[in-house]
Image (cartoon, rainbow, N blue to C red; front, side):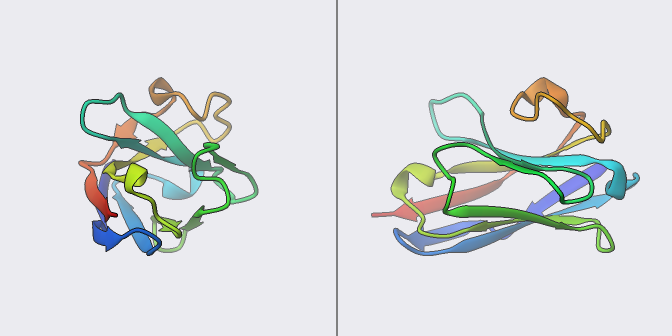
Length: 125
């Protein structure tokens, strides 16, 4: 399975970005999908996750109400809509896939089997 993120860039505080993650080589519709991020000098942290059928979503407290995860199984793509961006959202954002359709520890990196290369998001103040 290959995951390719896109949509990162530079945006002013208060602005919006939408990240995409396109999957290939596997059965995307069965996967739990997640987004993590890593800022310079910090550990990679959980941002959000979505179940295989979109029925359940999970968010870190720091992004709740500002970020929205969604997926299109017909396009093998997961999205991250980021609104009201803050400078502290600056990080490399990684897409991750778990072939476990019923991931319990959705906020744990080891729950995911495949990772993208990351896309940089920079929020200026």
